[in-house]
Image (cartoon, rainbow, N blue to C red; front, side, top):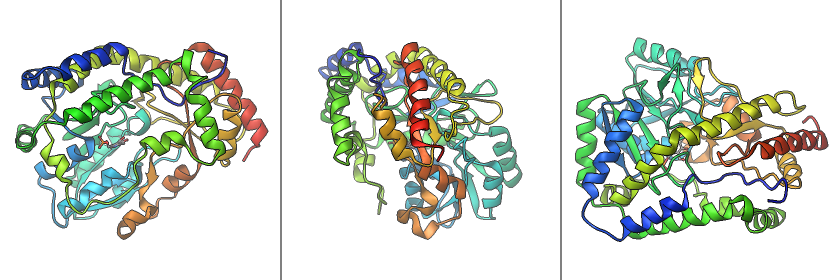
Length: 419
Ligand SMILES: Cc1ncc(COP(=O)(O)O)c(C=O)c1O
């Protein structure tokens, strides 16, 4: 590739997995068997007693809250910087999301803010291992134990990360993961819950079993989209295909990827019928998941190498704040999120050097108008939301891409100024 054209992301989905998807999409009948095999392999990878495939992480959270008996008048503590769909599930059970602040540069739940948010009504906390960074789970678990609060880990961005040697998802009462096309492992579409509690797993499975199968037409579309993403971000093609489209879109004031993949933030009046009616996974999702699980350590390993290189290379760039990690966290660098007071200027200066960045899809839910009745004061989440920028860290970056990116970021920060 001409030097220095670097996409913001690159899917882990491979052409072999696209072929596998096509094969499974054409046959019928073995859904239960393949899904059960994937659930078995996944639960043993995480180290949990049970794993159940669910259609999405947000519905996984809903099912876990329901199975854990959380409902009317209960409170659930959620970090303020998160994906809007997480807190949006809580009021559907009659419960209240209570937003707690994050560490400004770790981006994950601040244990002291969690403790301060606890009231006699608090029933659960959702430590979210955001951007691949595990939360300070010793502190969070000690506080949860002291106050009798259940722990539901959000592992949507951290499948395979560890905290003090233990995989996330194994550190609370239950956990959920998601495997969309842009995640560190994919099943085209779909998600998983894990738990050691027999009663919780049984309840979730019973609800899932009552629904129909995930739509094959949707999965066909996802497989085609995944393959198109693989092609569009391939180093030999990206510079001539997707990069000019993004650059033009940005010049015209739009981000074409956000436009295509971002979903408008909204509240649900009720659990969407599609969540319930198409809840059971199919063989194609599980077959792709099994292949991805085989590759996950190597995909995560590449992210970790790249992330550590960026940690080092960007540590002392004027005006740029680099991420930090709680003690004991072993991040998988799902994203590499820095802060800059002129992130738009920085993004433009990086784009002119061939590096594509994004501001991603998280919001400060504590000040988000869609959650106005649950507003809270979370200054770190607000500042992070206003200043964060994702520098590429995906597994397909080569050492020379990283070297170029580090130099480009230094130059761009100098050009834009200390902020
Ligand atoms: C931190 C976090 N939690 C939950 C979700 C929701 O996942 P899903 O789209 O499968 O509901 C996402 C989605 O990306 C996420 O990033």
